[in-house]
Image (cartoon, rainbow, N blue to C red; front, side, top):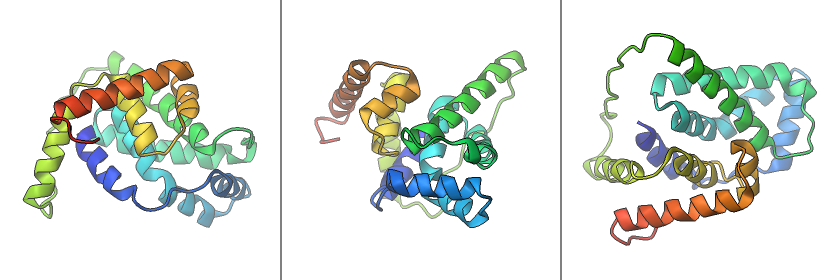
Amino acid sequence: MLFLCLTSTLENTQRERPSAPELKDLIRRIGLGEEAALAEFYQKTSSAVFGFALSICKNHADAEEIMQDTYLAVDANAGQYQPTGSPMAWLLTIAKNLALGRLRRSDRETAVETLPEQAHPSDTAERTENKMILETAMTILSEEERQILILHAVSGLKHREIAAVLGLTLSGTLSKYHRALKKLQKQLGGMAV
């Protein structure tokens, strides 16, 4: 399911990514209680948060709940936000902590089987085929490699920001990113990734 989201999210990344100053201003306005600022912040960042949450929990419903909880946390904590770092790194750290908390709780609870996701009926055959190819290719990546790839390609984070979010070194992040690209390129038959 991560892969289906990734392809649709990658298709949507063609639009301009919000700048750090723009996001910082939205967070400031959210802290002042502006509901319109929260709605705009959500609109500009939700696909990245959802894709990242899905890369951690690998369950569509859980990823949606984590995404919603992330924005509730943003609304509750925006007033304390210190604009010293990347606002996307701050946002994705909240999402990561919520996702990991959910995973820890679910490890203690009885696992309930979920039904597989159904493809959206409006998908064309070519788009469905591309999603299946990407889904198959992404299975060869480790969890960290998938997360790094999503954070860079979808969220537009810089490698140093990804390192901070995931608790890795910059060199480790770069190494895993390049390894993931090479694996995907090899899996996709040498096509440019």
